[in-house]
Image 1 (cartoon, rainbow, N blue to C red):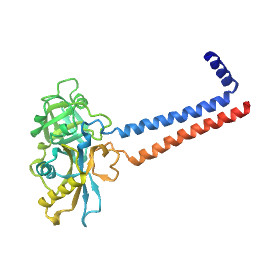
Image 2 (tube, rainbow, N blue to C red):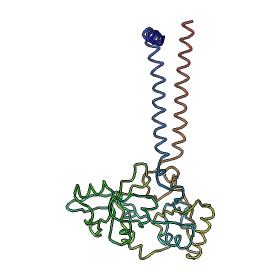
Image 3 (cartoon, rainbow, N blue to C red):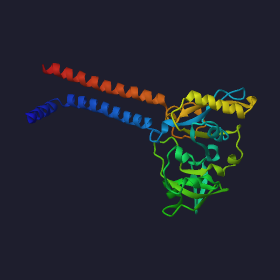
Length: 313
């Protein structure tokens, strides 16, 4: 019986080649486009979802105020904020500062006899490895607390030193700063907002010794030990600012942005070191477009099938 149905269907297709081609091509093309769009949407929504405990990790955002600044939102905060959060907020489990080499510029790296341009060199507190659960292949996190050291991603170590051993080797940054390689870590996934190719110790910077409430050039990530009330924590952060900064010098206020929202909800956030930024409005538009295309393809298929049915009758 089933074999007969196949034969009849094949004869109908051959007898109505143009109709069959239009009908099948229209529906399959619509479904293919919809599938591709939803794969892209799924990838965009997967950003930073792989971090263990990401729901308790937040980035501190700075909102400018006063006559000197227009109302802007920055991803940066002062270097003095991170130690103040750890000492004054009881729910803070971990906190780390992030400073891109050259305040966002590319770094020039000398490794052995190679001269390279590095787009992903960052100076971070060692806690960044725990906050983002970055897996160390070689070396230990405690080694990254001292100045003059750097950890390389697996692919970066390969790029710098080939198949040779990278641990214990030195690299020179911008022809002036020597850093010893003390750790190797797994490359971050492509759906990570951050592109850490190399993580140098924050203790290697002058800002580690001279922490200021005025220089806002550092991203700050905070991990809490439990689910928090964001508004309550933001109020406590403001109290910390009031205790450390004179009212006349307070040209900013702070808020918290969940790590899982950095990729899609950072439109309008300036000075961000997170390079892979999307747009939630684009995701909404593409979702609507995918549904519309599939709907049109289905309606087209049904119209043609109905017209053919009437002709056969």
